[in-house]
Length: 189
Image 1 (cartoon, one colour):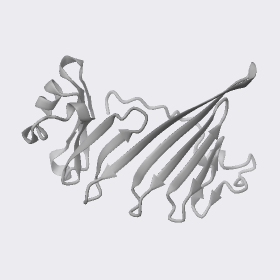
Image 2: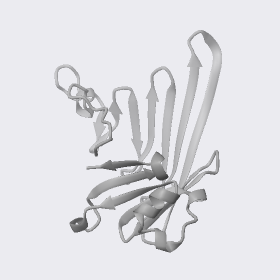
Image 3: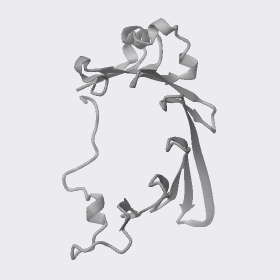
Image 4: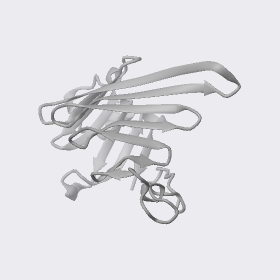
């Protein structure tokens, strides 16, 4: 997409690079049952179905991501726990927790994301299997006739809308429209 930034550099190590010793042999326990267990300073855990349930990172701060899945393997909760330490003050320790819950409709499409700390809610609007719009619940008070009208949503509501190529049956994104009025941004391929 035109305004998208990429952080991947050609010389950046891949998970496979980090999971190998200098002699090219895999690091012990780096990959198990076709699952990446270790990459650089990250450790991964999976449930019996192969869903990622925990990722831990440790450099200057210890960060843990935990993922909770429902019986249909849909993400229902994401938690980020960060532990801050001060090298100059060994007594200093602060923990910051971010938590989000997700809900789905009967067809398995995500319909909401709730920030459990602030109560902020993002709603997702679909047409068949195409994600049309996501917006903050406070800005989702538009009538049903506006759901398919990207111009109206971009001018009057703080939403992120997605436009797909006409012949793709909804699975090839063409553009992303963010914002309200002149402050909005358009990302396109």
